Length: 268
Image (cartoon, rainbow, N blue to C red; front, side, top):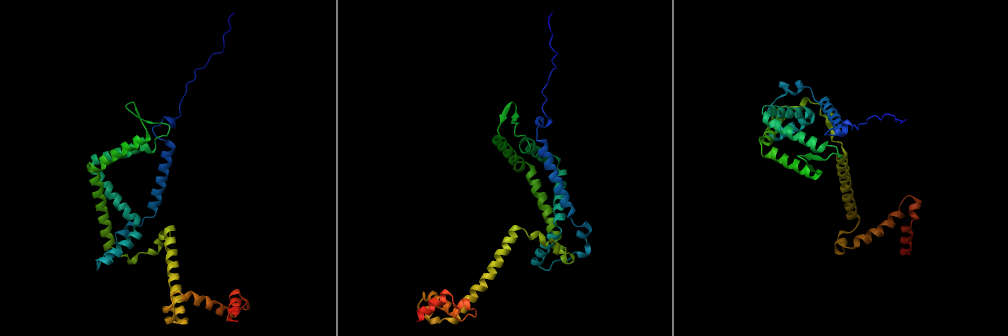
């Protein structure tokens, strides 16, 4: 009588969806989440559009310097609105040229799927040939140069950005900023580099008067002709003056200092 073993269940190895995906799903979701948060944060800081287009606030600048000052102040206040105007101009230009829009989208998706969010354990395979990361990066760079500089995409992007920049400069020059509360934008310039720059400026400003005061005080105490005749006598005169100052100090501890003792011994 033959014994039969327990039936064996067929087992199939199923890979995870993320490993089979052409891109890293978790990294791509994290990128979209950060992009969405940054976009919402920027949109929340925009100024009201009626305030941007208030006709009563427009006037002709009297000089080029006044126009430049207006542009700086208006940009500090309407920064997000100005960036949105440039974005709208760029979007309108791309939508009016569908072929350039398709080329740009194809280039962006190529970077996303082939390099930026491609899983590290999945090499790029095209027509049965495996490409390394360096080769993939080189191919994408060459493709980007071709699409931007050898097609209409580059000229379209540059012209759209220049038109938006011109609109922003024209609005900033003719919009009088007297009714804007620009004090709210001051904390934006208090970064780490601004802190270092301000600290260095304050230190320099504090050091210059101190040096000038010391030089004036030295010239008032010492004989100018004697200092001109002997250039090295300045240090000797200062070393002689220090114990004298200790001796006339109101503090008894200063009068009993080492410099005072040495001066007393020398005078004896």
